[in-house]
Length: 169
Image (cartoon, rainbow, N blue to C red; front, side):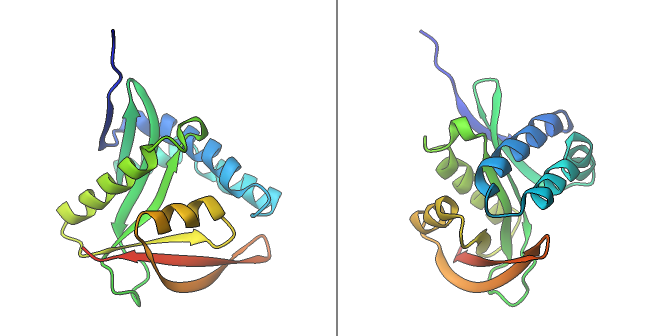
């Protein structure tokens, strides 16, 4: 009998291709019908393996969740970009391959991303999600996130509402 381990670790340069694949697949599922098609395609294409390789080489704080030998998801974390929010850390992105969604891996990845921020000295964290992305909004609420801000972002000339969720340390 073999058991597959679920683990998280800091991303390595060799993970760039897997992270790009996850980004591509997860964005197509999450944002199709929300972000205009041509704009979504441009955003996905910009974030290919070379982009991720460069980001990792420059020190972006990315953790990956592995299931056995497969990279199943990633989280990109760092200093909160919205200085008006009372949280020092931010999870910029948290995505799983679609086939790993709904199995508890997102919870594990979220908690380990949160630990990564704490270990880096950040007090509290924020996450932004498109308001129309019901699965993401439900996930962050289920993880205990409190709605702390609203904003809009333009995608291909279409303004979409986004919500910020916050957690204290």
